Length: 331
Image (cartoon, rainbow, N blue to C red; front, side, top):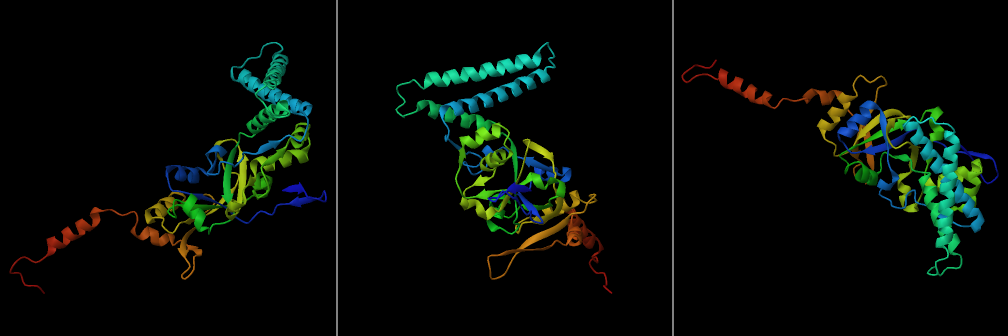
């Protein structure tokens, strides 16, 4: 995927051969694997409360902030009204004109409210209008990014991620390749820096500046604290909820504590898949804290599974039936 570097030339993110999704085992996991889907999660459910929560820096004056807020509110209100009209199949005369007018009215109403509140003597800062406008613009900016995120990693051998996301090593890790036609959709997370988004960049974004759009997108969706860098995270961004996977499922790795029955259930669930899956299981590297993987012996799984609990009871019953009676001579 291309983005401009400091020299104005195109720099490209090099995608790893595989990216991985850690999962616990559940009925939803089986469903997602069998249906080949991914779940685009609401970022507010993430374990980092600062994730996708940038702060707007007002590096422009109040007039520019007003214009940013006006544009945001007009566009959002217009989109909401258009969606509502489509839902009820309203096709009245001058529908679009009426919707645009309502969008402008909503924006002006909010700007008047901000201007009035800025006269409150309780505000002791030098420019209360800028303070309030910054707050409302930040809120509207975040509303533009109410999207879902699939978090993936370059690493399959991370003990921490197996513990945090792989159900204490009882779960699994799904490996995907990235088809060439979706490389631009898979974005690398940046670690470090700050959470500040410049209002000037937001203004340029609203005017159609593609570079500013990418800059704001990255700061909102792809910026995390350095402490999270061990995750080596890549992200898919899209509509929230379960969606067909744009990636190619290639392999499944079972955690060190993953039960044999779980392995068997997943192997059988994916048996006969149009594109076969490679199966691995994790094991320790003796004498170190490293984790390794080895191919799963699928045939060995099938030797004893599925088992029938009463099978052995009946075997012993049959042995009892052929035991010699008292006084009989054994050969």
